[in-house]
Amino acid sequence: MTCYETLFVVKATLTDEETAAQIAKIKDVLAKEGAELVATDDMGMRKLAYPVQKNDRGYYTVLFFKAEGTVINELERNLKINEDVIKFLTVKYVKNKEIAQFDKLVATATKKAEAPVEKAPEATPAPEAASETTEA
Image 1 (cartoon, rainbow, N blue to C red):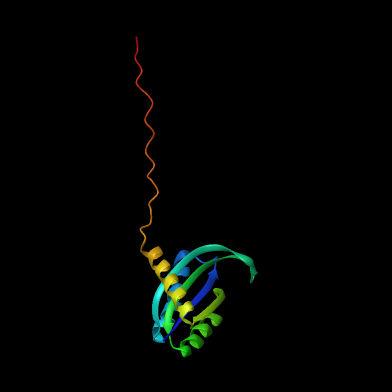
Image 2 (cartoon, rainbow, N blue to C red):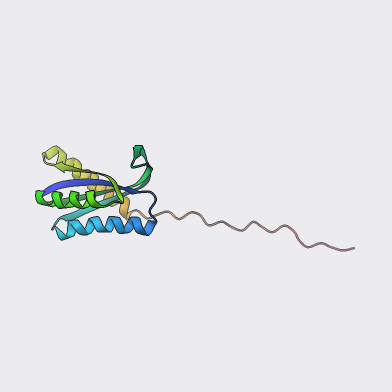
């Protein structure tokens, strides 16, 4: 099986749930076609280099997977007909140097996904001012 990377951009106007559903839909296409999903890198909301379909921003996601060449046709067909996907790009890794780079990218994406999300420090209540007054 050959190594592939597919980057796609989903419209920024979608809610978090709708965005997650679109990403899941693309992952399902890969699963149905027999591809092995190695890693996923959710890059988040970013500004586009130039407006695409009147969109200035988009939610970027990169999927790293191993599959046969016929899977790419079905994947790209689904990306083309999906109105919420505004851009996509698939890269094929063939040479040994390219595959080594693919492995590095997968390792980075895996570390990023497994890293614990730091919680923001909780706001501590301000110490109350001396509210007691003494009457003489």
